[in-house]
Length: 308
Image 1 (tube, rainbow, N blue to C red):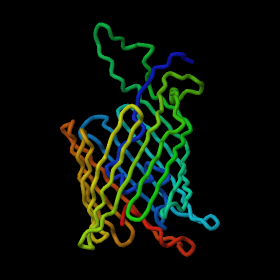
Image 2 (image 1 turned 180 degrees about the vertical axis):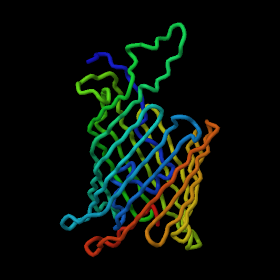
Image 3 (image 1 turned 90 degrees about the vertical axis):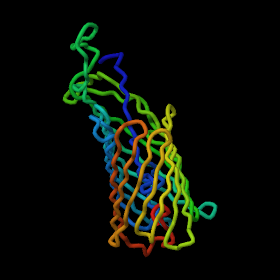
Image 4 (image 1 turned 120 degrees about the vertical axis):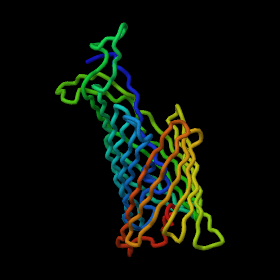
């Protein structure tokens, strides 16, 4: 086993422009916000046209469950992130406990599972010429992989027309050691640090003079304690069926969103981000599904504030 492992850097949490449509993707407290079974799939291709550009696949499902006299929530989250030579995957279970607080509802959530990291070291480019060695023993080759347990916590509070959420992903953090994919021995050849990420979000539903329209401004602040990113958004809903809006990441992107709800529970959303730094854009597709479940024992006054 090597004692001085090469330290690799990777992005563990991708970004979603349509974050306001699926709080459970980044906050386990944001599950079971209505009395339906909810499924959301996000697929994002960032910086279209660039080789090894970031891509995100995010699948989340949740539903309310009755426990005694209380209605809480359970969910599952599956994520596949790719950026450069790195691929990150995690599959985690979610649980949220609901409390009545200050005339609103507080949801305290936890999620846990495994996080796996893969690194395609064969894709490392080593220039030829003086000062460069194609056989440098300190540079790994082939496919490397590693796995660690992963835990996230989150709070979600809803009261009337507004909501707020605070969460922390990869709470355990620490070093993830990578081994050759086909190795049968403990042969750590590289490591990477898994850093925590903090999310703070909020939003408000504004009823307009025309009852067919509702305006929903929202924000999402995200930080790994080294850098931070902000999303400032405004979505206009029409007749509880159509929506469109904008999302601004200061110094980074300007996004445009459109979407539609169908009567049979399906919803489809699309966003396109115009980069302020790259001569390209990013595409993101969201597919959601809501299915009515037996609500005879569930508080029917619960209502989702994200999609009216």
